[in-house]
Image 1 (cartoon, rainbow, N blue to C red):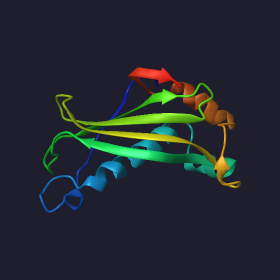
Image 2: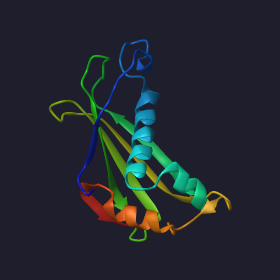
Image 3: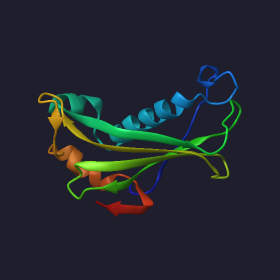
Length: 146
């Protein structure tokens, strides 16, 4: 799955703000949902994360809003890793909200790592399924190793 991961979004009335465009926090919610789906597609399900006492943790998350998104717009969300350490212990994810012509509507960037959920400390991605999946994560065109 090295190609960009792209999914059509289903916008809801409750996603709008008083100006009738997508509420700012919804961008973050869509990104989080897509990342969990992507992890699951790569074999890193919530059941695996619970069993291995392991999970992603976010240090920084930022959205750059380029154009308004309205309820009737056709919107797709892409996901890819922009930067990652060779051992997969730290990473930068990039989501792009795009229209049907691939015009960028917003960019969501986040930096993160992995957490041992028992020790509550940062951990290297030791579960085999995570190590294997990291090799298959979609990468941005400008992907770099850190």
